[in-house]
Length: 281
Image (cartoon, rainbow, N blue to C red; front, side, top):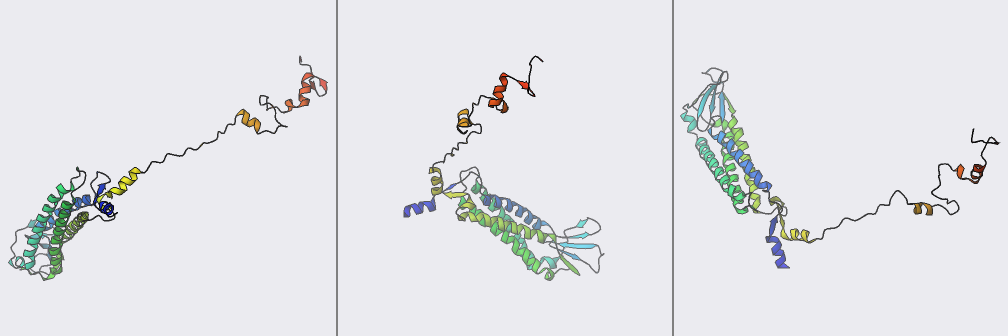
C-alpha cells in the first residue's frame, strides 16, 4: 500500500504534448517587460521640470538617469547631453543606474535559461530549469520596481542646479512600473512549475494511476432501442379488429355502403328512385 502511494506521488504523465500555459505566460511576459525596462533605462524622462523663472514658458527639462534634455512644447526639437552635476550627484541616480542595468542583464539570462527548459518539442519540459529561469525573471522585475518606486517617492527632493517651480512624473516611471510587474508576474508563474498545484493541472500532468485506470475501463457499447414500426402489417391490423366486425382487408373500405347487405342485393337489380335503372341509358 505504501509503495503504491509513493508511486502515485512520483510518476506523472503529460495529458498532451502542448507546452503548459504557465510556461507560455512566462515566456511572453518576460520579453515584454524587458523591452519596457530598456526604454525606461535609456529614455531621459524620469521627471519633467516646468515653469522656470529665467527661461521661456514653453521650455521643459526632461531628466533621466543617464541623460538630460531640454525640449520645447511648441516644437519637437530636443537638446540632450545637458550637464547637471547636482542632479547626477544624487545617490538615487547611481543606484538606479546599477539596478536597471542589472535587471536587463538578469532578464536576458533568465530567458536564455528558460529556452532549453521549455523545450516544447520534447515529451515534457525540464521543470527544474524552468523554475530557475522563473526565479531569475522574478528577481529582475524586483530590481526594476525598487529604483522606480524609490525615485517616485523622493521625486520632489532630488536636487538639481536648475531652479524649477513645477516637477512632474515622466513617462519612464510608468513604463518602469509596467515592465517590472510584467517580469514579476511572468517569473512567479513560471516558478510554479516546481510544485504540482491543483493536482498537477498547472503543469498539464495527471497521476499515472488515473491514466492507466481510465484506459483499463471497458468502453460501454451504446444501448440498442427497438422502435416499433408505425405501419402495421396486415395480420397485426386484422388481429386488432373484433371478430364480429372483422372483414376482409382486400375490400374497398372507401365505400362502406356498397359493402352492406342492402347494397349488395341492389347490385343485382339496380334502381333509381324506386324505378328500374337501365344501364343502357
